[in-house]
Each structure stands twice: as structure tokens, then as C-alpha cells.
Image 1 (tube, protein in one colour):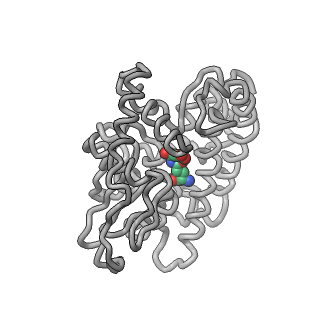
Image 2: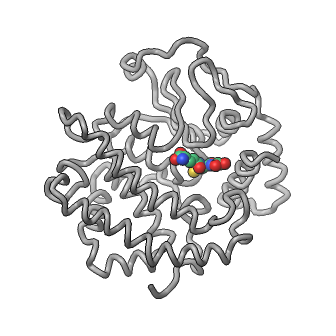
Image 3: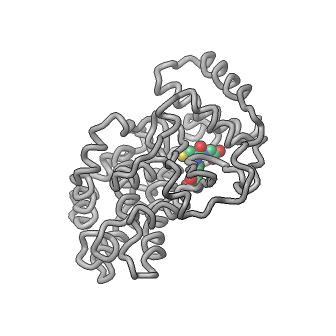
Amino acid sequence: MSLLTYRSFLHMRSLITTFHHPTSQVVHRLSSLYRSRIVPTTFTGLATMSVPASKRQKTSPYELLYWPGIPGRGEHIRLCFEETGTPYKDVCNADKAAMKELISLISDKNTGDKTNPPPLAPPVLRHGDLTIAQTPNIILYLAPKLGLAGPEGDENAIYHVNELALTALDGFSNEAHDTHHPIAPGAYYEEQKEEAKNKSKDYINNRIPKFLGYFERVLQGEASKGGEWLYAGQLTFADLVLWQCLDGVTFAFPKAVKRARDSGKYDKVFRLYERIKERDSIKSYLASERRKKYSMGIYRHYPELDADEA
Ligand SMILES: N[C@@H](CCC(=O)N[C@@H](CS)C(=O)NCC(=O)O)C(=O)O
């Protein structure tokens, strides 16, 4: 079994656990079912030159393909749509059967089409004839269209905002994932529990404070223009990415984050977190069924990893 197929299998297993079908036999049967449905083996998008972006924007729906039932990395993209009231289709959540489309897209048989290379892993965004992957890349594509890339006329804004978003993803998404899978992303947590404990200890003692301290400095800095938002005094995709990252890390390490919050050292960061949560668009999204619960994705709560003392 290739690594990718194995990872897909692990994801399937996690998702199925989420849907309360815990036996491994069911998982095996479903996993092979999905694999056997990997048809067509190549993704057949439009075999033409790409449509100009301006035309695509007006005529095509935004379609997000991501594992159903969990927020995961797809959440960063959902939040951009939700905050700006942009219609989008969450393909695999809208129709569970559509997961075979996603499995087909990331199949190791897929070589892409005339204009789109194959994605390695979800999230994937489809917009007309364009298919792109990589969370920050998708957000970078969307942000100027949705008005989340900073002030118009500031030609450097998108690079600053992207820098901040990438930093949040480094510290609070990628590293957070590695706390429960420090050795092998394709193996079970139970197979790397001891290493996960050590990794989490370091994460809690050194990495969470380092990244929180960094964002506190960003908010103290002049370029934030007032310290309410990360850049230029207005909400950008960096704020949304940071929000989701903090929310996920809080789910995974509630005690550690509470200690950080209570320390008073990162008040601006936590105020930004609360400010976003209270925005009308975000508030109603969080209360809706579109917002999925954390379970076995990037952010997992293993009490044994959320050590009591610093
Ligand atoms: N750097 C990529 C990572 C994508 C990724 O790891 N996706 C996960 C789901 S959140 C996955 O299914 N990975 C399968 C694999 O890595 O084999 C991104 O930010 O989109």
C-alpha cells in the first residue's frame, strides 16, 4: 500500500470513527470500496487552456474538496468564504458520496489534466477549470477576490499578510499536528505515544509561547496600525488563519492555552481571538451545522499530552 493510500485509509478510519462505525472490518471494507472506485484513474477536467481569471470569477462557483466531518485544514478556506458571505460548495460535506471525487483527485494514478497538475492532498479548490491545492496557496488565490488581502493600493500588503498567515500555520497547525504524530504521519498515534509526549512537552513549554509572543509583538508593532488586527488596521486572511489555529490549539491543549491566556502576556492575541469570534458572520457560522466538530484531524485532544505544569 503506498503511503498516500495508507494515509487516505487512516483518514477514512478516523472519519468512520467519527461517524460511529468503529469496527476495523467495516473500515477495511469501506477503504477498499473507495479505492476500487478510483475511476477515472486520471482526473478529467476541461482539456483546454485556462479560462481568464476575471471570467472564471464571475461565472464559476467555488468548490472546496476536503475530508468530510472535520474542520481540518479545509477550515481556513471555509472561514474566508464565511467571513465574506461568499457562496461556496463544500463538496464532500454536501454529499458524502462525493468523497470518491476527492479520492480520485488524490489517487496515485492521477496525473492531472492539460492545465492542472494533480493535487497530493486536500484541501483542494475547484474554480471553473482551475484546480489548486495547498491551504495557503488556495487562500492566496481567494484573498484578493474576497477583499481579505489588506488595503487596496498597498502593493506589499499581500506578502506581509501571507507571511503572517504562513507563520501561524507553521506554529499552530503543522507543529500542532506533529505533537501527536512526531515520528510517522502514516502510523497510529498509539505507535508513537512516548515521542508524542516529549514533543508535546516541548510544544507547550517552548513553541506555543514563542508563537504567541511573536503575534503579540506583531500586534504591538506599528504596521498593525493599532493592534486590533495583524496588519494595517483591518481584518485580513492572516487574522482568520490565526483565529482558526488558536481555536484548534485550544481544543488540543486546553490547559496549556489557559495558562498562556491567564499569564496576561498575550492579551492582544487573545483579544483578537475574541473579536473574530464575535463577528456576526463568524458567530452565525460557528453556531451552524456547517462548522464541524474537532475529532481525529490535525487538532486532537489527548489529555496525556496536555501536561499540567509548564
Ligand atoms: N501543506 C498541505 C498539507 C495537506 C495535508 O497534509 N492534508 C491532509 C489533510 S489535512 C492529508 O490528507 N494528507 C494526506 C497525506 O499527507 O498523505 C496544505 O497545507 O494543504
